[in-house]
Structure formats: structure tokens, C-alpha cells
Figure 1 (tube, rainbow, N blue to C red):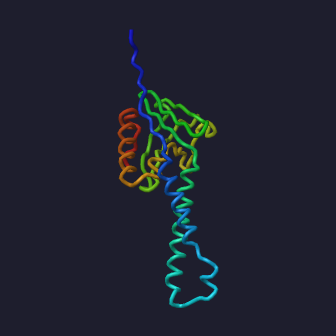
Figure 2 (figure 1 turned 45 degrees about the horizontal axis):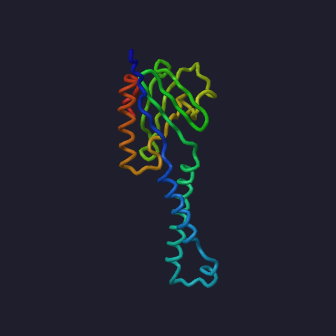
Figure 3 (figure 1 turned 180 degrees about the vertical axis):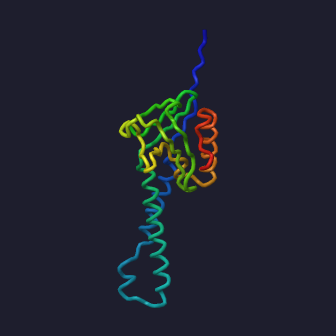
Length: 175
């Protein structure tokens, strides 16, 4: 007798693109940083160029910090099956049956979308390897953070389809 086991769909965070962007932006910010001699003999003709380079340096530095945050953040894995939802973050793991999931929202800010779930209130926040919002929802999975807009939109569609396929009534369509 052969028993079929549903392995489900697994989503993981990627860090390759953010690592490349972080290194490039860090190097650019160092390359564009102002030199002491730029201000020693300030020539008014060079002032717009110096200001532009300083603005570009700050912009590159902000992008580098954002990218390094994505690189350093612990990897997250989300697995959806017909019976449950599993989240792994770092060394912590939580498996929740679909019956313990109130509903799920997939969305938020387009550049930083999350899969947010309202879980059974009997679960203590210490058990869940995710941050909890003021409304009681847990941010379970960062969808496509660090990916291009086109790839992030594809990941959003894949995740929504998986949630509808496995969890069915649990997806909040308003997001």
C-alpha cells in the first residue's frame, strides 16, 4: 500500500542580490565620500559638484545600510501543506495546523510586503518565531525583500496562490 505524502510548497528568503548591492553601495559611498582638501580651499565654482557628490554619497550609504540589513537578517523558510503551515527563522521552528490560523494577509507596502497571519490566541508569542504587531498579527514571511520589483511581484502571486490552494478560506483578499 503506497501512501502519498504532500510535501507542500516552500518559500525561502534570498540574500544573494542584497549582498551584491550592499558591497557595491558601500564601495561607492567610500569612493564618493568628501575629501578634506575639498573643503580646505573652497572654490565656489566647484561647490555644486561637491554638493552633488555628497548627496550621492549619502544616498549610496543609505542603500548600503538597507541592503546590509537584508544580508544580516536571519533566513526565513515558510512551508505550506494541506494540513499545516510551518515557519523556520534561524534555529526556531513553528508548525501550526490550518485550524489554528484565523486568517492571512499577504501584502502591505509594495517594496516590503509581508505574509501576516492571525494565529490561535492560545499560542504564546514566545513560541512563534516572528514579530507580532499591535493588532495581534504575526509577520511570518518577508515576501521578496531584496528582489527586483518584477521578481517580488511574481513571489507575491506564487505565495497568494499557495495560500489559497492550501489554506483556502484563510487569505484576506483586502490586502
